Length: 85
Image 1 (cartoon, rainbow, N blue to C red):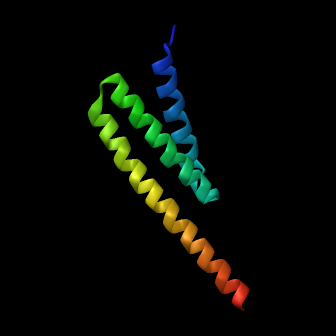
Image 2 (image 1 turned 30 degrees about the horizontal axis):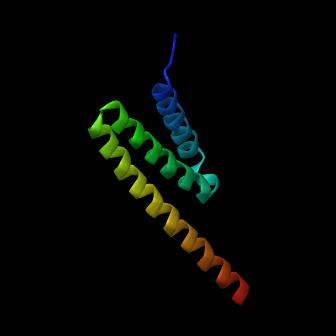
């Protein structure tokens, strides 16, 4: 079986996305990794010609980046509260 560069890029992006999704609860950085992998998968979708897939991956990226941002803000707030005690 031969994979061209575009297919390898897509498989890598989706594999990283799956791994980061599975590990999201361990660190907010896995959420960031998932969001970034969604962007890569969206780029793959556009390059491959599957624009509906690319649009959905873009939406998932926005949701994941938003979740990462809010999780980081909550963590910073919790650290400030702990330090103030």
